[in-house]
Length: 498
Image 1: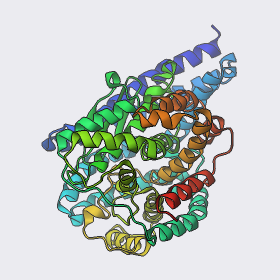
Image 2: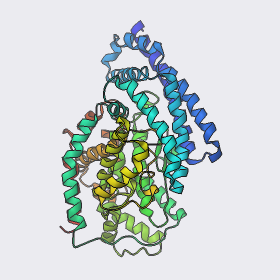
Image 3: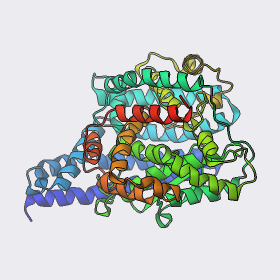
Image 4: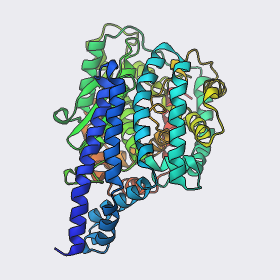
């Protein structure tokens, strides 16, 4: 083996250990949100900070630059897998060396503490209890963004963590293109003479969780490499041979549990579907949050909320629950897809969902740029929500305290949900062309054919391609918002008899 090829081998061996330690950090985060005793929060923040110190030191090790320089001169870079690994490592190294180690540790420590404070504040609708730690998180993230941007836009620097190549300008242009058609569709359906009935009744936690497990199984979730737990805010965690999901239960609204589960299954199936040869390498995780959200959103919406799959769900509900006010599968389909100006993003119908994201995009961009003071956030949120959705926010847990993201420091993440919806709209077109009998499978409660197509065309590639490229290759056309908007208009105009 030449010296240059040896450099690549040494780099990948070093990277493998770094990736493994990153998985350990992720497992600590999962434990914090699911099983950790509340009294352990302060100690956990120190543990997360210590581990982040180790990870930051490895990610900025000067040997990486030397190995990269030698490996890029090797024959190995002709191999697309090796070239992709080097691209990811080079990008990560270039970003990480700009951020001082103490700042990285401080962010890990403060965001770990902030998540517990947020959860407690949310349970009490106590915004004042959350604002001081939120101000700390924002200040640290602004410092980090300044290191990364080096004179450029702070918010763009943070977006790049979640969707490489995206900017506030490009995402804002996408939102501007989508908003008029979404607002027009919302106005039409809310003003329609026909309005679907809603689900009624009480649905016990144990029965909901049993059905949630069956829903995960229907989409091909591998229980040998995963598990389902409860969390305040549902999430998915892990990759390789350990991808876990969480959900939450509201006894008056089982759709909250069921569709949170299906959403997180989409994330987990992506991670579990990646080529096992990429495990513990830079290619062994989803390539971006936009592509990740494309998987969770197509599972949840185009598949899970479609008439075929909800028909099967209706039969399941009839056998598991006593009376819920809906007498046939069509009425159940209508209830699942009922459009209303609700407060909670994760429970929002498909027409309103992206409007929730657009509001958060504008607010967090203003926070990071310093145009919005933390102390003014609740009032600004409430004013904007009333303007966009026409209803007043009744309490903070249904307003600015509903999402966990800002306590975790995930500024720049929110717009990837809509980008994921856009990608999902494109993938849905390609999936239905490739598997024309997909609705026959879904009507039997079997979504594995959809998962198989997505695994072959998206999931198995992991980080091999750039985000938009993997979607383009899967679909055979450049991704755009058009297919999503066409799908929404066709679905909801038919449902509301317009």
